[in-house]
Picture (cartoon, rainbow over the protein chains, first blue to last red):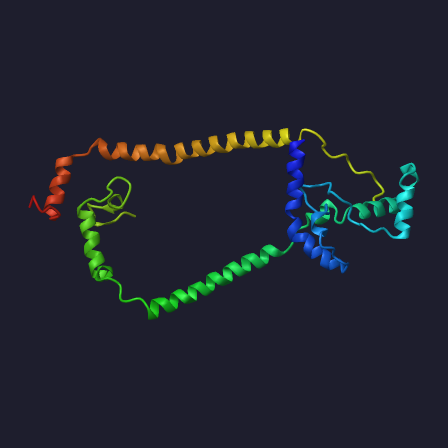
Length: 171
Length: 75
């Protein structure tokens, strides 16, 4: 019992965001307490919403609702679909349909990464000073020689790849 | 709309089936990763270390380093 109460809160979670938009989309008069009434939601995790999708039935729809009270074998296929559409806005297949949003997201992310690259290039040229002298080729060569003399990581790492007999890197 | 009847979908035991799938999968994946690591990384590494230290002469190593001039306290 408590679980269903909590569940109804989940449905109402979408309430404040979507009801306001939907009310304006209908173009109908929005009473001040519309948002406080149970509303319809298309949610995968709330399959049977609090109210039907169509609130105000036309004359033919009202007649159909009357026919629904008789044995359902009397209903044609189109009438059954019409009853479904009165109750529900989108079917599960429709509400679960994929969009192309991911392309926009990936494209936008890559675009801004590229823009950041331009900023960094500008920064390297106009902001940063020279790199330390320890990056000179000469210095790095002497540094490498010293590391090999010290036998840095002799088992699997740095010095393990140097052939001490032939004085060259192992092939 | 649809002239032929659709097959009735699975109605019960959905969570149980999902759980079984994922529990079995988790077992296989974790055991597989562990086995791959053991035979791909751990075993070779132990072998390399064993081979390195089998005929390792620490004094010879020290002499080589001393001659290369990396020490301050032993020239």
